[in-house]
Structure formats: structure tokens, C-alpha cells
Image (cartoon, rainbow, N blue to C red):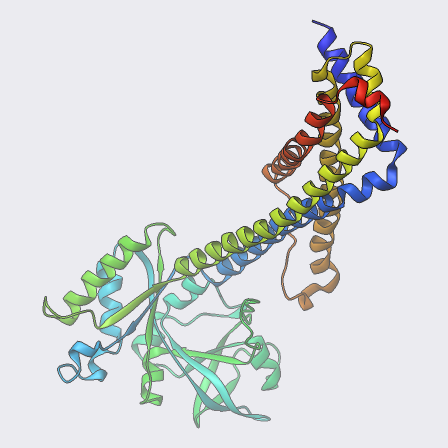
Length: 418
């Protein structure tokens, strides 16, 4: 029973000795495996970090958000006026009361308007009409002052919540709260200041923003195309929420059974699915390219093993003439090929880990200037196991022919080899 383990250990040590005796040749032979494993492990780590970044950005944007806006299908052209399909406060109220899967609902409409303070005039600032639930949906509460309340909405008060950038650009005193600004020549009291929301997934530059009660906004802008923004109670069950929203709005709008919906419903969750599918597609494409690299590396392993068999023909003949089992000869060359491949896989993983650490450090060095935060990048354990398993598989597949050739050598012919 001790013969087989001892034979295996001796074979492994002999293979390592052969690799050490031909260090440069061994490294060059493993180069295809090194590059292949390095590439696949780095791509997997990159995609993991990218998905983590996207998930964090979506969480900041609102993973449970639902967007609903008016839409007139072609079938209803001439039957329904486009103004009647616009979202309105009645639609939002119907959803607020009857859609049990939604926790918060707000009307949202925006338009660029001139805004001025006592010192500065800004020609076009995004002014958005919102309802009180907006703060809960966006998770954006005032850092100074107070949010827009239901009383503000009911009485269409001329109050405004602005972001910090607007405070600076309008040169408002202190934190801006209790200052007065003019929006389209209407005087508004600043009651709150919020943080500007930065979404790295968007290329939009952070700008000054003003938020006023939706009822006040409707008095200031005739031409608008509002939408309802809602938040689901749970991030799961988007299709159930879609069905419930459709049922409530069709009832509220009195649509005929044969008529299509006069609204559209979209979820942030659907964007996440697209990102995940894209990640899988990119990983698969990278896997194909890496597979080609590993194939080339495997061919290199096979070639060098054939050269090794040719160089050691007399040695093989001598061993067989003194009674070496052909299976032992086969095992020796096969293990040598496997060790070459697994050594290449180990070096590739070390390089991939160094690359992953570099990915993690870039956001820390560049800060907010980093286009993508890959601090969550990591090589998962399954990728490590896959890399070693694939490397060993390449060694077995491409080392088998040289090993069989060595095992089948005729000892007399081998001893005659020059």
C-alpha cells in the first residue's frame, strides 16, 4: 500500500527537478496558461467589482423605485386626447390609497426656469414640483431646515427646498434657510437645504436644483409631462406590482376592457437585470478568449513534452530495460505536464490577485475622480478552484499523448537512439 504514495511523491519530485533544470523553457511553456488564468481571474474580479459598484449606485438611486407616466397607444389615436393620459394628482392618490405593494407615491414634474436672489440671476435652473413622499422615496432629507409638507402641497405655498450647490451659486447667507429667492418672478421662501445627489452611472453634471410643492408648480408651468414616482415595499415581486398598478390606474381612469393601458410602468429592478445579463455576457465572451489562450498554452505544453520525450529517449529505454513499468513512465510524463500547467495556473492567480488589489486601490487614490469604484473587486473561491481545475485538465489532455508515446517506446530502439 505504501508503494503507490511513494511512487507518486518520487514522480512529483522528479518532475519538479526536470522543471528546475530547464527553468526558462518551463516558464515559456507555461506562458499561455499564465496569461489565460490571469485574464479569466482578473475579468471575474473586475465584473464582480463592477456589479458591486452598480448595485451600490442603484441602491443610492433607489432599487425599489417605480416610474409611471402617461402614454397614448396608436389604437386610441383619435379616441383619447393626449392631455387626458397625462399623470395627475388623482392618479397618484388612487395609487396611494389602493396599491398595497407601494409604500410611497409622489407626483414629479420639472422644467428649467430663471431663478434669482438679491445678488445673482441664474437663467435656467431645474425646478421640480414634488409631493411630500418624494423625500422618503429619494432618501434625501434636508440637512438644514425642513422638508416639503402636506400643508405646503394642499395650500400651494410658495416655499422651496434647494440643494447646497444652489445655496453657493445664489450666494445666499448662512445655510440659505429663511432666505428669499425668485422663481419666474415669484417670491419663494427657502425652507430647507438638501445634499446634491451624485450618481456616477450618469454623465450628468451636478447642478443647482429647486424643489417646490407640485400644486405650486402646476400654477407656474402649463406645458409639462409629469410622472408618478413610487417606491415598492419590497424589491421583489415587480411583476405583481406592475399588475396591481395597472389594475388601480385602469379603474381610476375608467378605461374600457378592450382598451390598452394609457400609461407605462418601469422598474429600476429591470435595469439591474440588464446589468447582470450584460455581466454574464462579458464574462462568457472573456471566457471564450481565455479558452483560446489556454488552448494555445496546452499546445505549447504538448510540444515541450514531446521534445522532452525525444531528449530522454535513451533514459526511458534504460529504465524500461531494467524493468520499469510502462504505466510508471506514462505517469511520470503526465504528472510533469500537470505540474507545469498547475504552476502556470498558480502564477496566473498571483498576477490576477495583484491586478485585483490594484483595482481596489484606484478609487482610494483618485477619490471622487475615479470613474468606477471597484473596491468590491475580489477573486471568488470558485474562480480559484476553476482555474486550478482547468489548468490540471489542460495538463491531462495535452500531456496524455507525449506520456503515451513515452510509455510505448521500445526499449531496444530507445537505447539505440542518438
